[in-house]
Image (cartoon, rainbow, N blue to C red):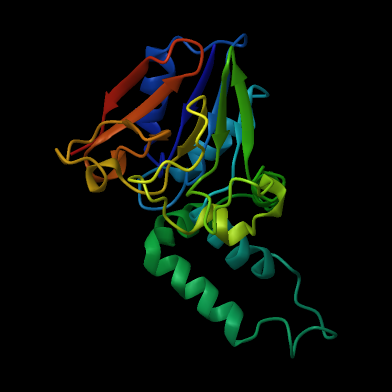
Length: 238
């Protein structure tokens, strides 16, 4: 079976409980729509678990990108040659913005890793996809973290800017693809902000599946099964 999850945000216990609940095995595949770190208690455990599973496929989110942008400069060895221009004002602001947006716990745990572990994580994020396409019978699922900003039905996915895919929120009231068998699957926007009932449940309307059920804020962590259309939940921490 193929499963899709999003926005785990350091909720390691819920992530492991969800894998157990779906009986995730080496025969299955898990597609993660980014933002596995920041805000929650154990982001490094989440990302390192995923890295050790060859059947987990990672799609970069805005928090992953902020972390990568902030830390890859800090991992460069300072020498006499680069001392004066190693970090500039933009680098400092990038780091501060990431910390203010939930990166503090990630930065703290990252700092305790070995240099080899740090580089493995940064390389893993650098090699992450920006989108994936899954097909199941007549349906096609387009997997991105946030949405398809500046959308055009004639536009190829590779023509979108990274910012369009990881930062800009989807308009869930609008059907993007007129073909009802083409479905856009996203995270990024917590579903209580999308659903009229404000429930922390998956949103499925207008050719969209939104999976960020606000686990780190006390909602739920959700997995969508591509083959069956079933949604499996675990409760988030209070």
